[in-house]
Structures are given as C-alpha cells and as structure tokens.
Amino acid sequence: MSLSYPSIIKSLPKFSKPIYLDYQATTPTDPRVVEEMMPFLTEHFGNPHSITHEYGLFSKKAIDLSRERVADLIGARSPKDVLFTSGATESNNTAIKGLSWYFGKDKKPYIITQRTEHKCVLESCRFLEMQGWKVIYLDVDKYGRVDPAQLDATIREVGPDKVSVVSIMMVNNEIGTLQPVHEIGEICSSHGVMFHCDAAQAVGKMPVDVQKDHINLLSISGHKMYGPKGIGALYISRKPRVRLIPLMSGGGQERGIRSGTLAPALVVGMGSAAEIAGKEMAQDLAHVTRLGKKLRDGFTSKLEDVVLNGHPTERYPGSVNMSFSCVEGEALLAGLHDLAVSSGSACTSASLEPSYVLHALGVACTSASLEPSYVLHALGVSPELAHTSIRFSVGRFTTDEEIDKAIGDVTTSVKRLRELSPLWEMKQEGIDISKINWTMH
Amino acid sequence: MLSQITHDIITFKGLGTIFKSMSTAETTLEGRYSDKVSDHYNNPRNVGTFDKEDPSVGTAYEGAPACGDVLRLQLKVDDKTGKIVDAKFKAFGCMSAIASSSYATELVKGKTLDEAGAITNKDISEELALPPIKLHCSMLAEQAIQGAIENYKKKKVGCGAKNCCSTDSSSKTDCGA
Image (cartoon, rainbow over all chains, first blue to last red; front, side, top):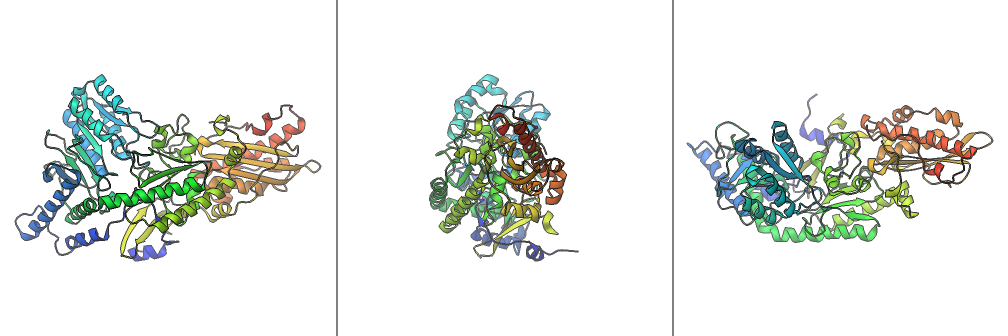
C-alpha cells in the first residue's frame, strides 16, 4: 500500500496543533525565507558549478549573495571564509576531525573540549580518541560554564604545540548557558592553538563576531535560525591560515573542503535567514527575552520548588530549562497535550534518554536508555532534578497567549502529579529526600 | 498503523508553512503507550496515604529518585480474614510507573496475602502492554507488593524499632531495563 504525504497527515491519531515551544530543537522556516527559496526549486534549477551557462551562473550568483549574508552575520572578514555544509553536525565533524587529521596525532595528540557539548562534537572527539588522539573533557561549573583559567592551565600543561584543536560551544542547546567565548578565544589565540566554536544555537539569535573573539572555526545551523533544515555553514578563517583534511572527497567544491553540488535552494534559504536575522536581531532578542522571562516568572510565581537550569544571566534568554521537583519529566510531558516541548535534547532522544547534560552526580542507571541528561549531569545537578527537567524554548513567533497557556497547563499538570508523588509528600513533611538511603542497584 | 512513525506536525500560523518535529515511537507518548497506561495515568486508582504506624498497614518504597522511579505501595489488611481490604499508592516516575503502581493497587484488593504475594511483574506488564523499555516499572511494582506484605508481617511479629520497617525497602532496585 503506498502512502501519499497528505494521507500520512490525515491518518495521524491526533493533529491538535500544540503550541510550539521547542525552538532549540528546530525553528519553523520563516515564510519570507521559503518565498526566497522557491524559485530555486522551480525555474532556477541550475547547478551552481555549471559556469558555462546561464542556469548555472544564476544559481552561483544566488549562492555568492548567501555567502556574503552569512559572513556579515558573523563578522567574518570575507565571504570566502564561509563554506556551506549539510548542517552543524557536518560542520563540527569537518572542523574537529579535519584539524586533527591535518596535524596528526603524533604532532598534536591533544583535543580539548568540554562535557556539555552537543553529541556530534563529543562523538567526533570519541571517534578521534579511538584513532589515537587524547581528548581532555573540561569540567563545567554548576551552570555549565567552562572556567577559562582551567582551559589556560590545561593548554599549558599539555603544551600548546601539542593541541590539535580546542572545541567549545557558544550556547548550550539544552540549558541555554553562554560560554565565555571571548576569553576562550583570547587564551587560544595567545597560545597559537586552533579554536573551534559550535555556534549552532547562537548565530542569528545573538551578536556573533568571529574576529573580535579570535574564533578560527565556527559552526552554523540553518534550521536553528528560521532557515530550512539540511543546510549549515562552517566559517574558517584565512588569517591565520587554517588547514583541514576534508571529510568528503570529490569535485573540490567549497575550497576543496566540502565537495558536492551545493543546493541553491537551501543555500539561499540560509542566506535569506541570515539577512532577516541580522536585520531583526534586536527585536527578536527583546521578544524572546521578554517571553522567556515571562515563562520563568510564571512558573516560579505559581509553583514552589522549581529550578532554572543553566546560568541565570549568561545565557540565551529564549531557552528555559526548568526542573520541577518531585515530578518526573516524561510523566509531566504526557499531561501537556497542547504543548510541544522536550525533556532534554531532541538530538539525544533516540531512546528514552532525557538529557545527558543533566546527568546526575554519581549514580548512573545501568541502562543507557534510562540515563537522564548528560549535560545536567556534568553540572552536578542532583539526580532527582535531572529526571524532572523540561526544556522550553521560545522564538520569533511565540506569542503572549501561548506563554500564558503554557504556564497554566504546566502548573496544573505539575500540581496534579505532585499529588501523586511520594517524594512531594515527603518534602511537605519536611523530610530531606537527599538524605534517605534509597535502595540502590 | 503509523504508531511506529509518529510525527508531530504543526502548521504555522496558517501561512502554509509546515514543519515537522520528528520523534521516534519510543519518545512520543501517543505512539508508545497503550490505552490502559493512559487510563491509569489520567485516572489513577487509589492514590493516597495510610498511616504507616497503623498495625494493619504494610508499606513499601521501591526505586530511587536518581533512577527516575519511586513507588510507594501500602496495603491495609484485615487481621481476621488475612485479606487485603484496601491499598494506596503514590508514584514519582513516568506514565508506566504510575500505571504499574495504580494497577497493582487494583490487583491486590480482596486478595489474601499469599495470593497477593504470587502476583508477578508479568501480570502487570501484560495487562498494561508495557513496551520492553518500561518492563522495569512492572518489576518495581511487583517488588513493592512483596515489600508491603513483608512489612505488614514484620510489624505483626513486632520487630521493635519503630521506623525501620516502614521506610526500608529490602529488595534490590535495578534501574536497568
């Protein structure tokens, strides 16, 4: 039986148009972006590398413009510093593996990163570890921030000329914490060490300046900034010169670093999103700051014992990851039919894993699929709070009414589940749950 | 049946922009839970608390906050008939954990201690059609039933120390699936 796309939609059990509060997982493609993309899916279908005819040249021009727009958005010296990829995962892989392979594990055996990076960064590092590199995972404080002094000490300890790359993200995808990127950049630059920054959650949503922050490589994700999915970019500075071994072999497109025919529609989507983001950044940021705060304040004013995860001020304000004490995250989600949110990072949720970022101190559940967030774990958030976390993220199109409804629904659900919770009862009786000797595996 | 490929699809402000937020069957709640689990989650039976000190009550806690599951099961036993006349539960955990303990309270009511002791996790997981990844919830519920029975029995015999029996769950907790 063959299905059509409309019939798939029709056959869904429940199409109830929940309120979308999962902007950190992905953003809707801005209608203006879709409009700019459309011609490149229809009449202007040329291969941008076919420079012998108009079809190709037209596509190429559109891509050149997109490159300029992305370069402007991040403060790059020149559009030539921007390469297009299939997304931030590919950009991260290209940067970390590319640099490490170029230097070689004999010359520069060390890679320095930190525990709350996105899985694609951690997995790239793990992959290189298996190939013989030594990876140092910096610890983070209880807000998820790296200590620049510790980075400096680590680089000195192993020897700056022995480090292939330092890879530290700008904004964490689960808890919104902003890393001290400027200090990190200065430290790396002073030691002559390559600094790669996964800025997927930051670009287009807050000011990014790769030159000011001494960032050598920067990963960008199209679908996190109201562009289409399937497109990303990698900024690679040319001063100082950065050399990489490419992941993809082929026709030599994108300065030989990323072979493959570019998709003009997607690249245009990214360029268009970049332009809009640049123009509307101030108002977007004001909007998400206001609504993010409204959401947080809504919870803290109506409920006791709720905790915001991540740094209180050094953060992307649209990200609101909260722990609701004594209520388990998945059970809470089950009661929120009208909201689209996540209990932890969507990217790690292939199984039932909430979030590795919140993965608790000490006790690890034996089954990987029952692990709570590794990001929260790295923060040292107590195990119980790790299982009670929900990630809300607001965006350009979020409205006040949606926030009001979210606050109402969550409050109701939390209160109901607390009535069912033995932990909540114990708390009300003044018992300190952390002191109890639970029977452990 | 598309329960294996569950998509949440949202139309955006009616402008015709459609985007998908995709989850696997494991994470989407509609796709993975049986109607019975949903029913217990939305209408849990026998939620509440008996007085732990009451000699006719047996109490057990299973699980740990670190694992994301804590079940408390309490039985009220009629001394004369040896039958469980009432049961109450509270649960911190996912839908399956709540459903397993809610169903457990239904299962034990009216049974003798021996009959209740014979209840297995399979009785619970099959009835609720728990997916493999959630089978441990039914095991916790089984352990809770047995723990509560044991607690009641211990109290009857009289072990002396007031608090040790009521909060001690003597069976092992395994977070693994």
